[in-house]
Length: 418
Image 1 (cartoon, rainbow, N blue to C red):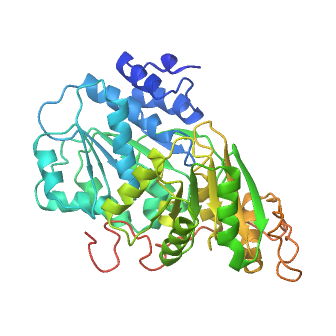
Image 2: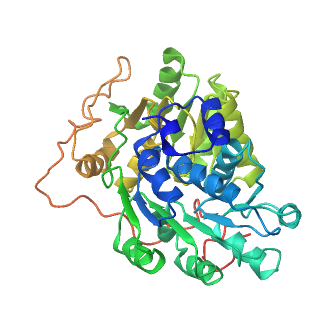
Image 3: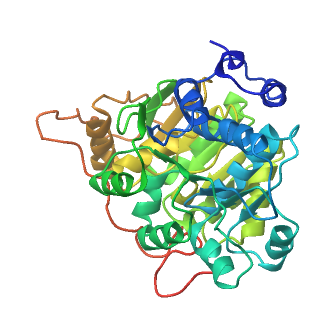
């Protein structure tokens, strides 16, 4: 099957071809015709499956087919994080480059006035995070009374981050008659309740197992002493000739420190996390995509939402405390049909975390020592086997992230978070 078979306009097919895509992914193949037919959809899809194009392409086609009657937006995409909002709107501009449609992206951490000016000039589509969107509504710089299409992207992540009340406030501002598209990597009870109250006879689309690791990602763990992790990482990057690698740490301080150490090793690097200004985060991601930065060191704020075409390597410098975050991390590679490699540097203290990850995946991650970096006897125990008799895998956390680390714009921890 090709994109030509999905009923898309020539202008959209031209934009897709310009990006080098010829064959739709399963989510695109299933979702695009249903959306074009006007159905509500409930789509279960892991990150990296091509879901952004799955809703962006038909949405642009339908907006073009219904000429605007004014300056008010007719489509709204809600996302949990600033990075994801920026990247979805970038996709809107990329795929809609040959259509006379206007878009705007709205999130916190930056000034409101440029967003106000953009909205006043008139837009057809808005991509936003919930908190800043409600700020604009409250200041009467945005009218949501003309929305025809609503997309909730990564809805499970929005609920995890405590956005349910903001989402309900937004829904109350929208016209009753509209098309609703809900995308979620997992189907929790909260998601089912949200879908029941939001969707009208939805078409169900499922393209990935719950908590499934990306099929095209090869996974390996390298045992190493904690104090030699940075040395091993630099060795892997330099000896492997890696031009692009996304590295995950647990803490913001650790991300800064590792980035600085890699720079001293002669590896261009940048850090991205919640304490960085939005401008700094945007520049770091842009430099990484452009190839002027080889290593992007990130905390889990970047585990969802970062969309980097054909990213070859993801490294877990430290394993996450929550096993499911591992799935989201390695989902940054092996996206939309391209192959990727995920490596984890595992110290003795992290074997329990590795066991949790293996239980979640229900598969072993091979342990491969790197010559010259083998742990000293007694420093690392033999890798544990996943015990499949111990009941279900660890549950995803149901509340907001711990503390303020990586909290998105608008996350409710006592303030509005601008």
